[in-house]
Length: 305
View 1 (cartoon, rainbow, N blue to C red):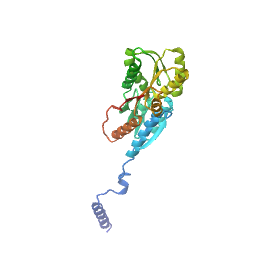
View 2 (view 1 turned 120 degrees about the horizontal axis):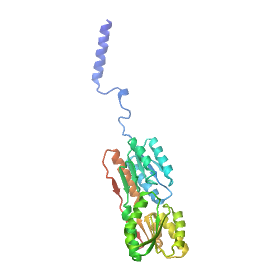
View 3 (view 1 turned 90 degrees about the vertical axis):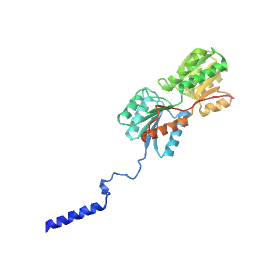
View 4 (view 1 turned 180 degrees about the vertical axis):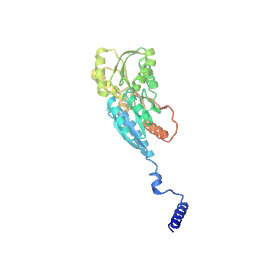
């Protein structure tokens, strides 16, 4: 009797399972009917610069459009802080990292940490020296430096005496903008002095004050970004000298200064577009698509009309 009962129960279970091809609830993968929300981390070199504020805005707008969550951290131009920030983002389980390096060499350790656990890295505006970066989204900094030198030569003639305000030492943008500038300046201009002002407006003012005292013959200044250019312009105005100043970025303050007849020119980038393109690239990578190793955003020389 017991054996007969066992046979009946067994047959009943077989019939019940045959009626449904769906596995029991406990065997189903969690959230199988829901698409996982993507989460990306954005590490910015500094948000005390309008250029990078616009870059952040481009990331946020594109991420919102695509339903991607963004965690943003500000390195405050401190390479050690940025490395720690990126490590924190990794601990928070981001699916991809967008990094605007403060220092292209120093950030390499954090990039390699992300590589070790398969988190894809996209760099913005500046590259990383080591580690695997899926793509760099930036303007053609070398071309921009060349544009600045050509403009100065056209305005002042060949062999004009020029000062150069360099960006943060170790940043790829500093090297590339300087390299492009010297491609032309070494042939057409006389670069009498160059000094770093760390992409900072206040430092640009201080450094320019010192350069004016040591090199009163300066006729033009090329600054690796608009913040330094605007600081240099303030020092020049205080000195009463008439010196041509060219910046790089095309930020709002620089464009306003050009329209007011003060700053001579800027090599204008499109930081919001850079942020947008970087977010698009990260999304493509996370969806299994291939992206180019370098994605360029167009440049334009803005001058007094």
